[in-house]
Image 1 (cartoon, rainbow, N blue to C red):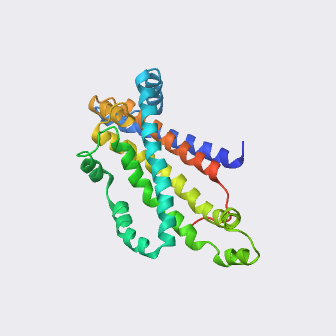
Image 2 (cartoon, rainbow, N blue to C red):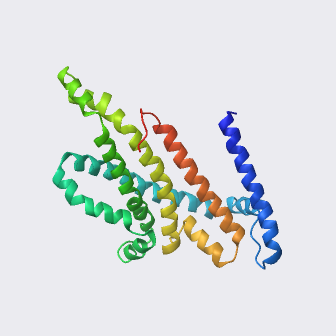
Image 3 (cartoon, rainbow, N blue to C red):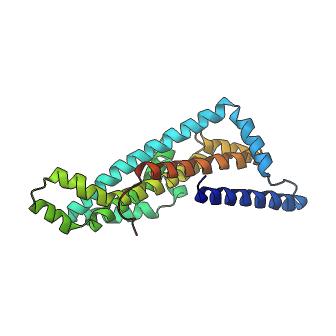
Length: 249
């Protein structure tokens, strides 16, 4: 195991130990005890033996990933259009700022009036990721080396070749950062929307049910699943898309 992984593993063990000791100390004075790591893992094992849990995981992942994919596609297209046409950039900038500033809870309640509840988490994930992708890709286009592009054109390199060899590698670090960051935000905002609108077959609805039943060991277990999913998706995206010569500021 690489030294960095050893350090990560040691940090995880340290904080799990802090969690265990903290729960033991706090639980002396509480009627409803804080779940310990062992109680949380026990609840996770119990949930993992039910079909409803896996159906909820799959349904939540599908909804959120569809919203995320739409945000990446439309955010990238919007960024390209805004950098190509100044009028489009001027017209779309206020809308982009508005989408970025809107609270997840408020938007979830508003769209509840018009969308079926099973579609709301995907839509919220889309709205959360859309401005992130747009801003990052647009920043990458603006920071691309235009002198290098002009020099390549002078030497007879075609547009497609310039795009493949120069423009895309310049934008790639910005796109990678947007996708990796956006995945984490999509997952968390999507689950939050599931909790608010009580979406059937969802991790968010299972969290609400655990809270209502005062089954806090299950709430902790489901939260752990959400965190692990978020980390795995973000790291997986970075591993798949890593490359490029510089990171965005």
